[in-house]
Structures are given as structure tokens and as C-alpha cells.
Image (cartoon, rainbow, N blue to C red; front, side):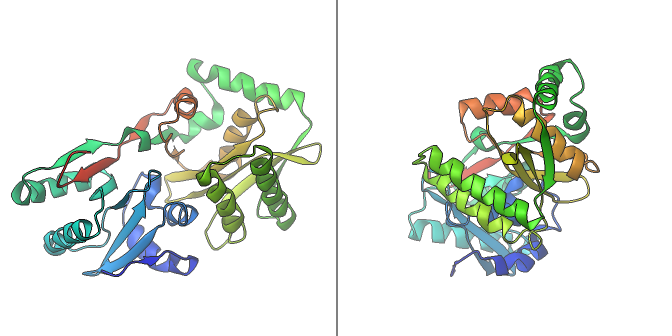
Length: 303
């Protein structure tokens, strides 16, 4: 198997394999893979007419994602081939980012061909799914505090919401993103890669079928958000940034982005919390109706 790094030119190929599926996970959106192409060294190959994606987690360990487009009669051969590759290349994991349906499918293979199998939930990478209407209206007692934060922002600031597809706005967002990274003197390499990716996807905004807004106060960008529809029912928020010095800014951009760009979908995927305590608390506070589970599958040892 010869893997190559994902590029923008691969979008049509990936879309051909990805969109017959109805994933609720953000991991199988081409834009997600493209954003993290450098940080996670996202690579792919085609084997038995199936798309095989290999990537690196934030700890530096490589693994395969769910093969896409395979024929059922070829799955056994694909799994054997991937196991051989894993052993030869000393990979820690066989699979990560697996949904429950694929886990059930490969359990039979595991029981037949492996003595030591580990399948476990990867809680830090569960996706947070929300009802779009509730996020838009901030209705109900549990979201009352969010609505207060939203109202506080509206009353306190003389703001303007602009579409990122505008070239001037796009450049303002890129400049703001880079300034925020520098001002924080951040040594987190993944935030560094994310900052580079924001510029990259904004420069390819139409090609990637993205939507986005920026919030200005006193002619300065104080928040921005970028996402896309994956199908008629589901949208994913890829990027959301705000200046916390502006009270209520996150409640405002969260609600406003859905109102303006995703008011016709049922589900909003706000991605995972990566095990970060503050991020987990924030995502749970918006009352997800479901956490989309992801699984780790390994053949040789439980890790």
C-alpha cells in the first residue's frame, strides 16, 4: 500500500467515496480532513476500490479510519492487508474514529481471526450533536443562561455581522486569527496548524462549500465561525473563535451563525472536546441531544 498526503485536488475523489454514507461524525467531512492534513499527517490510498485513510492522532500515533466504498466480499482481505501494514510499520492502533455500525461489522472478523482484541469507546473524541432549532432559539430553562449572554452582547455592543465570503471580511478574519495566535504567544503546535488551516480554507472558501460569518465591534473582528452542510439534515461547525473580552460573544456567534446559515437543517455537529475540561463543560452546557460515539479497535493489545 502506497499512501499519499491529502491535497485540495483530492476533494472530488473523497466526495465520491464519502457522500454515499450518512455519517453524523465530523471526521469524514473532506474539510475536516483537509484542515488537519498537516497536524495529523492525513494520507490515503485506494485498495480494492476502497478509500483507505491513515492519520496521526494528537499523541503522534498512526491509525486507519473506516475504509470507504468497499464491497462486503472484499472486507476480509482489506482488514488482513491493513493488519499486515500496521505490524510492518509498528503502528500503535489498527483503527480509530470508528462508528458503531462498522465496529459491529468487524467484530465477526475479529472473533474469527484474532485472539486478543480490544474495542473501546474514545470518549475524548465523541462528537456533540445539537438540535439546530434549540440552538437558534436558545429556548428552555437549560439554555436560559445562554440566552442572557446573547442578550447581554446585543444590548452592550454596537455590532455588525458580515458574510466571510466577502473578500475584505475574509482578509480581516485571516489577520485577526493570526494576531490572536501571536498575542497568546501560544506554543501549542496544533493551534499553530489550525491558524494556518484557517487561512487555507478561507482562500478556498467556495471550493470547499463553506459558510461563515464574522462579528465586528467598532470595525474590529471580535468573533468568527466557519462551517458547512454535510447533507440536508446536518451541518458541522469547523471553526469558532471569539474574543472573550466581549461578554456574551460566544453565545451570540453560536446562535447567529445558525440563524443566518443553517436554519434549514435539523442537526448541528459541534465536533469533539478532545478531553479538555473547559471545552467539555462548555459543549455540555449547550445541552446536546446526543454524543456521537467513536471507537478504537486494536488487534494485538488493549491500549
